[in-house]
Length: 200
Length: 341
Image 1: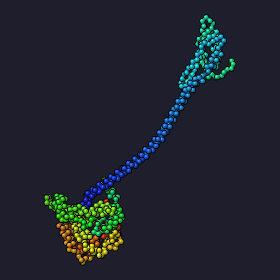
Image 2: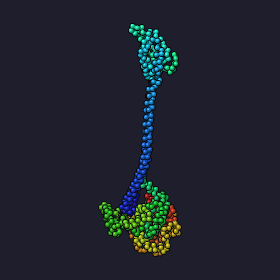
Image 3: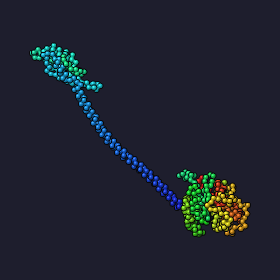
Image 4: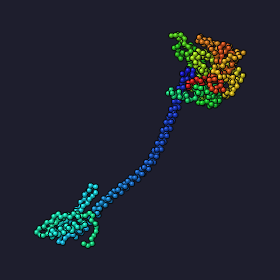
């Protein structure tokens, strides 16, 4: 407990001291806050500069990556186009050459028989395992002197390595003559080999 | 907030007691709140500003409590009605001395008499000239100290004996303290540790001063007193003030003015408290080094006399700050030690 005789300084002196202390503490606080703000600003500025440098570097890399991506997309498109072209060409390359088919059909034809029409039809079917299955069907229309010639022609085509599944569609007399009009259908063997026979 | 203040008081060093005498400043600091140990004690000449600055370096901290010399203190007993305000009290004081006009006044109620509308109170008013206290503050602060309070010997000297009045019934002990320093002496009468009377006697010790100087009793300024042979006489291990029973009375006696003033002080006290008589007289201050004169005063008053030496309660003080001259400084240190505890 404070005694009245403890202190004879006027209260205004203590008040002034308190005020000065508060002002001093305030100045110190302001200084601390200012220093902290300046330090934070300097740190942020340093970070911002680093960010700007990184941004330049990132922009260069981004442009480079863009060019690379465009080149890659272009290359992919070219590859895709090439694959499509190759696939398209494959149809002509992988099948049995038409000349060979025509050659075989005409060479096996019996005497006094003639073909009036040859139709080649390519059928494409997608299998369950999503593979293309290509089948070439030939429809023949012709005239033969008799039924035996037609049978001989069917026999000859069946024994050919280029054809399979030979079937007669119809055979009928042509007008008042003894000639027989016929139609037959056969399938080109997909595994036919390109072996040109020199002589038969 | 209270815990923070308590923690601050515990951690920070105790303030330095700076007692301004007529010629020198006594600086003292103690440490420890339970067991008091001397941190440092030194005397510096009043006008030696560099010496004060150097002396302050040996203490911990800068906080100071200054004590004005007795000559600068205004003391007056007045009897006023209970409802009388500060302005009326000041006007009453101005009738006694015009210096009260510029004084910072503190008052304590000593006794209340009467009842109802006629009730009156005896006030002990103590004043300090604001200019003088400001000078003291500036003097110390220019030397690097921070003055937290300015007090007077009247209060500080009594605080030195607080340890004597801690038991039940000690408040029944009535002591008269005579602080003799320089041009003025302060007479205080305390019931236990409570001061109930104070009076300043002007020019009471002038003769003593002259005598002290001629006998080379003055301790050299700016030096520790630990090696002084003079202080060997003051050392003791008792807590009670040193008795004057065996001391030879001075043949010169004391001057009539002092004797008359002391008699009037006793009569005033007896009038205020007729059921209490002064049990003992304790001499403090530099003038109390003249034990012959103290014995003469005690004999004149017919009261058992003692010479104060509160250094017994401060470990290490007997070597560098013993004797009655250090009573006020020790009282201030013990007071702030009590606050810190």
